[in-house]
Image (cartoon, rainbow, N blue to C red; front, side, top):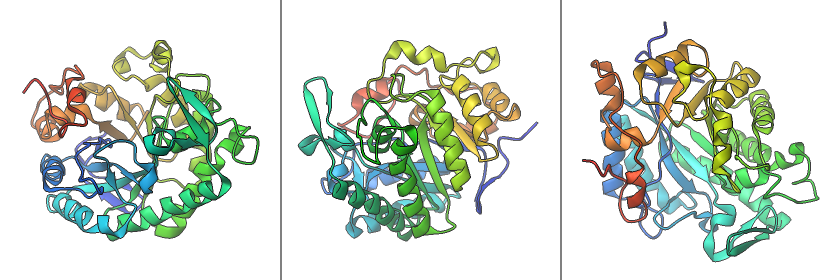
Length: 354
Protein backbone atom coordinates (compact mmCIF):
# COMPACT_ATOMS: atom_id res chain seq x y z
CA UNK A 1 0.00 0.00 0.00
CA UNK A 2 1.36 3.42 -0.97
CA UNK A 3 1.51 6.08 1.69
CA UNK A 4 -0.39 9.21 0.63
CA UNK A 5 1.60 11.23 3.13
CA UNK A 6 5.04 10.36 1.79
CA UNK A 7 6.93 12.45 -0.83
CA UNK A 8 6.20 12.15 -4.54
CA UNK A 9 8.36 13.44 -7.41
CA UNK A 10 7.18 15.13 -10.62
CA UNK A 11 10.16 15.62 -12.93
CA UNK A 12 12.68 17.09 -10.44
CA UNK A 13 10.04 18.65 -8.18
CA UNK A 14 9.79 16.87 -4.84
CA UNK A 15 6.32 17.18 -3.31
CA UNK A 16 5.89 16.32 0.37
CA UNK A 17 2.79 14.15 -0.17
CA UNK A 18 0.21 13.04 -2.75
CA UNK A 19 -2.27 15.86 -2.05
CA UNK A 20 -2.90 18.57 -4.63
CA UNK A 21 -5.04 21.68 -4.44
CA UNK A 22 -6.76 22.06 -7.79
CA UNK A 23 -6.77 25.59 -9.20
CA UNK A 24 -9.54 27.55 -7.47
CA UNK A 25 -10.09 31.11 -8.56
CA UNK A 26 -10.97 33.69 -5.94
CA UNK A 27 -12.23 36.63 -8.03
CA UNK A 28 -10.32 38.76 -5.55
CA UNK A 29 -7.43 40.38 -7.41
CA UNK A 30 -7.04 44.12 -7.88
CA UNK A 31 -8.54 45.74 -10.98
CA UNK A 32 -5.18 45.53 -12.78
CA UNK A 33 -4.84 41.82 -12.02
CA UNK A 34 -2.31 42.05 -9.20
CA UNK A 35 -2.81 39.74 -6.24
CA UNK A 36 -3.39 41.22 -2.80
CA UNK A 37 -2.63 40.30 0.80
CA UNK A 38 -5.96 38.58 1.64
CA UNK A 39 -5.57 36.00 -1.14
CA UNK A 40 -1.88 35.53 -0.35
CA UNK A 41 -2.96 34.58 3.18
CA UNK A 42 -5.31 31.94 1.72
CA UNK A 43 -2.40 30.28 -0.10
CA UNK A 44 -0.15 30.54 2.93
CA UNK A 45 -2.81 28.82 5.03
CA UNK A 46 -3.03 25.96 2.53
CA UNK A 47 0.73 25.49 2.72
CA UNK A 48 0.62 25.56 6.52
CA UNK A 49 -2.07 22.88 6.25
CA UNK A 50 0.50 20.69 4.46
CA UNK A 51 -1.06 20.57 0.99
CA UNK A 52 1.74 19.10 -1.11
CA UNK A 53 1.15 20.80 -4.46
CA UNK A 54 -0.93 23.96 -4.86
CA UNK A 55 -2.13 25.17 -8.25
CA UNK A 56 -2.67 28.93 -8.25
CA UNK A 57 -6.16 29.87 -9.49
CA UNK A 58 -6.06 30.74 -13.17
CA UNK A 59 -4.00 33.71 -14.34
CA UNK A 60 -4.84 35.49 -17.59
CA UNK A 61 -2.05 35.50 -20.16
CA UNK A 62 -3.34 38.55 -22.07
CA UNK A 63 -5.46 41.46 -20.91
CA UNK A 64 -8.21 40.36 -23.32
CA UNK A 65 -8.07 36.84 -21.92
CA UNK A 66 -9.70 37.73 -18.61
CA UNK A 67 -12.53 35.36 -17.66
CA UNK A 68 -14.20 37.39 -14.92
CA UNK A 69 -13.92 40.39 -12.66
CA UNK A 70 -11.28 39.93 -9.99
CA UNK A 71 -9.24 37.39 -11.97
CA UNK A 72 -5.50 37.67 -11.34
CA UNK A 73 -3.11 38.20 -14.23
CA UNK A 74 0.31 37.22 -15.45
CA UNK A 75 0.16 39.22 -18.68
CA UNK A 76 2.58 41.93 -17.60
CA UNK A 77 5.76 42.26 -15.56
CA UNK A 78 3.81 44.41 -13.08
CA UNK A 79 2.16 41.20 -11.85
CA UNK A 80 5.46 39.60 -10.83
CA UNK A 81 6.08 41.27 -7.42
CA UNK A 82 2.71 40.24 -5.99
CA UNK A 83 3.04 36.72 -7.34
CA UNK A 84 6.55 36.50 -5.89
CA UNK A 85 5.13 37.45 -2.50
CA UNK A 86 2.56 34.66 -2.89
CA UNK A 87 5.07 31.96 -3.85
CA UNK A 88 7.39 33.01 -1.01
CA UNK A 89 4.51 32.59 1.45
CA UNK A 90 3.84 29.05 0.17
CA UNK A 91 7.50 28.01 0.10
CA UNK A 92 8.04 29.29 3.63
CA UNK A 93 5.86 26.44 4.91
CA UNK A 94 7.21 23.67 2.69
CA UNK A 95 4.59 23.67 -0.06
CA UNK A 96 5.10 23.59 -3.82
CA UNK A 97 3.09 25.84 -6.12
CA UNK A 98 2.56 26.03 -9.88
CA UNK A 99 0.88 28.80 -11.88
CA UNK A 100 -2.19 27.92 -13.91
CA UNK A 101 -2.04 30.03 -17.09
CA UNK A 102 -5.22 30.62 -19.05
CA UNK A 103 -7.08 32.60 -21.69
CA UNK A 104 -10.85 33.01 -21.52
CA UNK A 105 -11.53 33.00 -25.27
CA UNK A 106 -15.27 33.46 -25.85
CA UNK A 107 -15.81 34.09 -22.12
CA UNK A 108 -14.08 37.51 -22.32
CA UNK A 109 -17.12 39.78 -22.41
CA UNK A 110 -15.79 43.05 -23.86
CA UNK A 111 -14.77 41.26 -27.07
CA UNK A 112 -15.80 37.63 -27.19
CA UNK A 113 -13.39 35.87 -29.57
CA UNK A 114 -12.61 32.19 -29.96
CA UNK A 115 -11.68 29.59 -32.54
CA UNK A 116 -14.87 30.22 -34.56
CA UNK A 117 -18.07 32.17 -34.64
CA UNK A 118 -19.96 30.63 -31.75
CA UNK A 119 -23.29 31.40 -30.06
CA UNK A 120 -24.46 30.56 -26.59
CA UNK A 121 -27.60 32.00 -25.03
CA UNK A 122 -27.95 35.64 -26.01
CA UNK A 123 -24.38 36.23 -27.16
CA UNK A 124 -22.25 35.40 -30.21
CA UNK A 125 -18.45 35.27 -30.30
CA UNK A 126 -16.35 36.15 -33.31
CA UNK A 127 -13.59 34.10 -34.92
CA UNK A 128 -9.99 34.88 -33.98
CA UNK A 129 -7.65 35.88 -36.79
CA UNK A 130 -4.49 33.91 -37.55
CA UNK A 131 -2.43 36.78 -36.11
CA UNK A 132 -4.46 36.68 -32.91
CA UNK A 133 -3.97 32.94 -32.58
CA UNK A 134 -0.22 33.22 -33.05
CA UNK A 135 0.17 36.16 -30.67
CA UNK A 136 -1.88 34.34 -28.03
CA UNK A 137 0.38 31.29 -28.26
CA UNK A 138 3.35 33.58 -27.65
CA UNK A 139 1.51 35.14 -24.71
CA UNK A 140 1.26 31.74 -23.02
CA UNK A 141 5.03 31.30 -23.26
CA UNK A 142 5.64 34.85 -21.98
CA UNK A 143 3.35 34.08 -19.06
CA UNK A 144 5.23 30.86 -18.33
CA UNK A 145 8.50 32.76 -18.16
CA UNK A 146 6.95 35.31 -15.81
CA UNK A 147 5.72 32.45 -13.66
CA UNK A 148 9.26 31.21 -13.17
CA UNK A 149 10.47 34.75 -12.48
CA UNK A 150 7.75 34.93 -9.83
CA UNK A 151 9.10 31.90 -8.01
CA UNK A 152 6.58 29.28 -9.10
CA UNK A 153 7.82 25.69 -9.23
CA UNK A 154 6.25 25.13 -12.65
CA UNK A 155 3.19 25.95 -14.73
CA UNK A 156 -0.11 24.27 -15.44
CA UNK A 157 -1.72 24.95 -18.83
CA UNK A 158 -5.48 25.27 -18.42
CA UNK A 159 -6.99 23.10 -21.14
CA UNK A 160 -10.37 22.44 -19.51
CA UNK A 161 -13.73 23.96 -18.50
CA UNK A 162 -14.62 25.66 -21.75
CA UNK A 163 -11.84 28.25 -21.85
CA UNK A 164 -9.76 28.95 -24.96
CA UNK A 165 -7.74 25.73 -25.25
CA UNK A 166 -10.84 23.70 -24.43
CA UNK A 167 -12.71 25.72 -27.08
CA UNK A 168 -10.11 24.82 -29.70
CA UNK A 169 -10.33 21.13 -28.77
CA UNK A 170 -14.12 20.98 -29.13
CA UNK A 171 -15.76 20.47 -32.52
CA UNK A 172 -18.76 22.33 -31.11
CA UNK A 173 -16.90 25.62 -30.57
CA UNK A 174 -14.19 25.05 -33.20
CA UNK A 175 -15.66 24.78 -36.69
CA UNK A 176 -12.67 26.27 -38.50
CA UNK A 177 -11.71 24.81 -41.87
CA UNK A 178 -8.04 25.83 -41.82
CA UNK A 179 -5.17 24.07 -40.04
CA UNK A 180 -6.57 25.09 -36.63
CA UNK A 181 -9.85 23.17 -37.01
CA UNK A 182 -11.57 20.16 -38.52
CA UNK A 183 -9.92 16.90 -37.43
CA UNK A 184 -8.96 16.35 -33.81
CA UNK A 185 -5.33 16.52 -34.89
CA UNK A 186 -5.95 20.04 -36.20
CA UNK A 187 -8.04 21.03 -33.18
CA UNK A 188 -5.10 19.93 -30.98
CA UNK A 189 -2.71 22.18 -32.89
CA UNK A 190 -3.31 25.21 -30.66
CA UNK A 191 -2.64 23.21 -27.49
CA UNK A 192 0.41 21.53 -29.03
CA UNK A 193 1.95 24.85 -30.03
CA UNK A 194 1.21 26.35 -26.63
CA UNK A 195 2.91 23.39 -24.97
CA UNK A 196 5.93 23.57 -27.31
CA UNK A 197 6.38 27.29 -26.69
CA UNK A 198 5.99 26.95 -22.94
CA UNK A 199 8.41 24.01 -22.79
CA UNK A 200 10.90 25.84 -24.95
CA UNK A 201 10.72 28.86 -22.68
CA UNK A 202 11.04 27.19 -19.27
CA UNK A 203 13.09 24.10 -20.18
CA UNK A 204 13.22 21.38 -17.55
CA UNK A 205 10.86 23.01 -15.09
CA UNK A 206 7.58 21.08 -14.69
CA UNK A 207 4.80 21.66 -17.22
CA UNK A 208 1.40 20.29 -16.19
CA UNK A 209 -2.00 20.41 -17.85
CA UNK A 210 -5.63 20.32 -16.77
CA UNK A 211 -7.89 18.70 -19.36
CA UNK A 212 -11.49 17.65 -19.60
CA UNK A 213 -12.25 13.96 -19.53
CA UNK A 214 -15.44 14.95 -21.37
CA UNK A 215 -17.20 18.21 -22.23
CA UNK A 216 -20.50 16.34 -21.79
CA UNK A 217 -21.57 17.58 -25.19
CA UNK A 218 -20.89 16.13 -28.62
CA UNK A 219 -17.94 18.45 -29.12
CA UNK A 220 -15.30 16.69 -27.02
CA UNK A 221 -15.76 13.19 -25.60
CA UNK A 222 -13.65 10.80 -23.57
CA UNK A 223 -12.42 9.21 -26.80
CA UNK A 224 -11.03 12.59 -27.81
CA UNK A 225 -9.56 13.11 -24.35
CA UNK A 226 -7.76 9.76 -24.53
CA UNK A 227 -6.10 10.82 -27.79
CA UNK A 228 -5.14 14.23 -26.41
CA UNK A 229 -3.65 12.65 -23.27
CA UNK A 230 -1.63 10.16 -25.31
CA UNK A 231 -0.36 12.98 -27.51
CA UNK A 232 0.69 14.99 -24.45
CA UNK A 233 2.42 11.97 -22.96
CA UNK A 234 4.45 11.60 -26.13
CA UNK A 235 5.36 15.29 -26.05
CA UNK A 236 6.66 15.02 -22.48
CA UNK A 237 4.00 16.59 -20.27
CA UNK A 238 4.88 16.14 -16.60
CA UNK A 239 1.41 15.62 -15.09
CA UNK A 240 -2.14 15.43 -16.45
CA UNK A 241 -4.94 16.60 -14.15
CA UNK A 242 -8.31 15.22 -15.25
CA UNK A 243 -11.53 17.18 -14.83
CA UNK A 244 -14.68 17.69 -16.93
CA UNK A 245 -17.29 20.07 -18.27
CA UNK A 246 -17.05 22.48 -21.19
CA UNK A 247 -19.02 24.53 -23.68
CA UNK A 248 -22.47 23.15 -24.47
CA UNK A 249 -22.42 20.88 -21.43
CA UNK A 250 -25.51 18.74 -20.88
CA UNK A 251 -25.72 17.88 -17.20
CA UNK A 252 -27.65 14.68 -17.87
CA UNK A 253 -24.57 13.25 -19.65
CA UNK A 254 -22.35 13.47 -16.57
CA UNK A 255 -23.13 9.97 -15.24
CA UNK A 256 -21.33 8.43 -18.23
CA UNK A 257 -18.00 9.49 -16.66
CA UNK A 258 -18.42 7.60 -13.37
CA UNK A 259 -16.60 4.42 -12.43
CA UNK A 260 -18.34 1.07 -12.22
CA UNK A 261 -16.11 0.22 -9.25
CA UNK A 262 -18.27 0.76 -6.12
CA UNK A 263 -15.15 1.71 -4.14
CA UNK A 264 -14.66 4.69 -6.48
CA UNK A 265 -18.31 5.68 -6.82
CA UNK A 266 -17.82 9.13 -5.29
CA UNK A 267 -15.50 10.17 -8.13
CA UNK A 268 -17.50 12.02 -10.78
CA UNK A 269 -14.95 11.33 -13.53
CA UNK A 270 -13.49 8.06 -12.23
CA UNK A 271 -14.55 5.87 -15.16
CA UNK A 272 -13.25 8.24 -17.79
CA UNK A 273 -10.05 8.71 -15.77
CA UNK A 274 -9.31 4.99 -16.04
CA UNK A 275 -9.41 5.17 -19.85
CA UNK A 276 -7.19 8.27 -19.90
CA UNK A 277 -4.77 6.65 -17.47
CA UNK A 278 -4.36 3.60 -19.66
CA UNK A 279 -3.54 5.75 -22.68
CA UNK A 280 -1.17 8.14 -20.92
CA UNK A 281 0.99 5.81 -18.78
CA UNK A 282 3.57 6.31 -17.37
CA UNK A 283 2.87 10.05 -17.20
CA UNK A 284 1.76 11.04 -13.67
CA UNK A 285 -1.95 11.77 -13.37
CA UNK A 286 -4.23 13.57 -10.92
CA UNK A 287 -8.01 13.53 -10.70
CA UNK A 288 -10.30 16.20 -9.26
CA UNK A 289 -13.96 16.30 -8.22
CA UNK A 290 -15.56 14.01 -5.70
CA UNK A 291 -12.87 12.93 -3.25
CA UNK A 292 -14.13 12.95 0.31
CA UNK A 293 -13.17 9.69 2.07
CA UNK A 294 -9.56 8.83 2.83
CA UNK A 295 -10.23 5.21 1.92
CA UNK A 296 -11.32 6.29 -1.58
CA UNK A 297 -8.18 8.38 -1.97
CA UNK A 298 -6.06 5.41 -0.92
CA UNK A 299 -7.90 3.05 -3.29
CA UNK A 300 -7.51 5.45 -6.21
CA UNK A 301 -3.73 5.48 -5.79
CA UNK A 302 -3.30 1.83 -4.82
CA UNK A 303 -5.32 0.67 -7.83
CA UNK A 304 -3.04 2.77 -10.09
CA UNK A 305 -5.91 4.95 -11.24
CA UNK A 306 -3.97 8.11 -10.37
CA UNK A 307 -0.87 9.38 -8.61
CA UNK A 308 -2.13 12.61 -7.02
CA UNK A 309 -5.34 13.39 -5.09
CA UNK A 310 -6.67 16.73 -6.32
CA UNK A 311 -9.30 18.65 -4.34
CA UNK A 312 -10.82 22.12 -4.40
CA UNK A 313 -13.97 22.72 -2.34
CA UNK A 314 -12.87 20.57 0.64
CA UNK A 315 -9.94 22.96 1.16
CA UNK A 316 -12.28 25.98 1.16
CA UNK A 317 -13.96 24.60 4.26
CA UNK A 318 -10.90 22.89 5.70
CA UNK A 319 -7.48 24.26 4.68
CA UNK A 320 -5.92 21.95 7.29
CA UNK A 321 -7.52 18.87 5.69
CA UNK A 322 -4.23 17.11 4.90
CA UNK A 323 -3.00 17.59 8.46
CA UNK A 324 -6.31 16.36 9.80
CA UNK A 325 -6.32 13.24 7.61
CA UNK A 326 -2.77 12.50 8.63
CA UNK A 327 -3.82 12.78 12.28
CA UNK A 328 -6.58 10.21 11.87
CA UNK A 329 -9.60 11.99 10.39
CA UNK A 330 -11.25 9.65 7.88
CA UNK A 331 -12.95 12.07 5.50
CA UNK A 332 -13.37 15.71 4.56
CA UNK A 333 -16.00 17.72 6.41
CA UNK A 334 -17.14 19.45 3.20
CA UNK A 335 -20.69 18.29 2.30
CA UNK A 336 -20.49 19.62 -1.30
CA UNK A 337 -23.45 21.96 -0.84
CA UNK A 338 -21.86 24.44 -3.30
CA UNK A 339 -22.66 27.33 -1.02
CA UNK A 340 -19.09 28.56 -1.43
CA UNK A 341 -19.82 29.30 -5.07
CA UNK A 342 -22.53 31.78 -4.09
CA UNK A 343 -19.86 34.15 -2.79
CA UNK A 344 -17.87 34.01 -6.04
CA UNK A 345 -17.20 37.47 -7.44
CA UNK A 346 -17.90 39.24 -4.17
CA UNK A 347 -15.25 37.85 -1.84
CA UNK A 348 -12.75 35.07 -1.41
CA UNK A 349 -14.77 31.88 -1.52
CA UNK A 350 -15.54 30.73 2.00
CA UNK A 351 -17.59 27.92 3.48
CA UNK A 352 -21.12 29.17 4.25
CA UNK A 353 -21.52 26.55 7.00
CA UNK A 354 -18.78 27.97 9.20
